[in-house]
Amino acid sequence: MSAKRIVILGGTGFVGRHLLPRLCIEGYELVVLTRNRAGHLERWLPPGADFHDCDVYDRAALVRALTGADAAINLIGILNEKGDSGHGFQRAHVDLTSTLVAACRDAGVRRLLQMSALNAGRGQSHYLRSRGEAEAVVKASHLDWTLFQPSVIFGRGDGLLMRFRELLRLAPVLPLARAQAKFAPVYVGDVVEAFVRALSDRSTIRQVYELYGPEVITLKKLVRKIARVMGWRRWVLPLPDALGWFQAAIAERLPGKPFSRDNFRSLRTDSVGGIDGLHRLGIEPVALSARIEGLLGRIDSRQKRLDRYRAGVQ
Image (tube, rainbow, N blue to C red):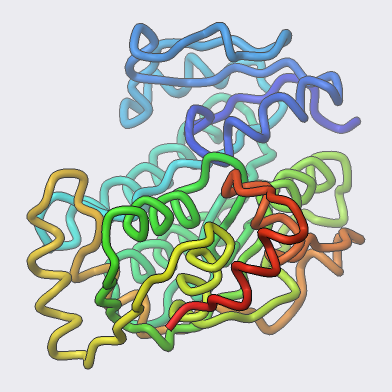
């Protein structure tokens, strides 16, 4: 094991909640940085992990947190910002990464594992642009870095399947922007495995790994599949881009910002890979179709499943 004490930024998010228990099982000592320790339930932290209060945008505070660590993992990322200027993405992705790289250098921490995104630096969205700029910061550093570029990630507690399940539960007709956008969803367990293997394998240093699943699916087919698994008859209505843009402009003003203009721009670039990073790491990927029923909480008798498929989704 090349790293023992690991400082994690973004450890309370979706991927972090899956990664922390696995790293503890592997014997790592984890320090999870947070700006709101009181707002997190520490009881879900596995043995060997601890919260530390830290403003991750404060370089001096980061240096103190990183001192004595063997590696840092940056999982911080946002899918939406306040407004549509790109400033929020710039701060969360580029500015934070620059601060972290400098803090690692000051604290003597050479190993950095950085979460990015498939298509980082491509397309027209603030999200993808800022992810690409953050990657450039990491690549220009003298750290022993590894970059991970996942497609959309699915798994228990994700923001993909669960969000559409709730929308479909409420709406018999679901207007859908960018319905033909393509994804290769990757299982969160495979993403976790990629991080774990990279920590103990020095051949992953200065490498970029595209993480995507074995199935390519359009957004329209994904939403229909969710409805079918749940046994709901729903009409999925693809929108032309002009209406899709209008939908995004309205939705980003709703509580929770379920969809935004920047999400719309991101969907213009298909989230499918070219060089299989999971294969390079020796990981056999889990297909979405193999897990979707269990994740959605709809495991029925064989007859109910047959009835559901016969009913279909229009």
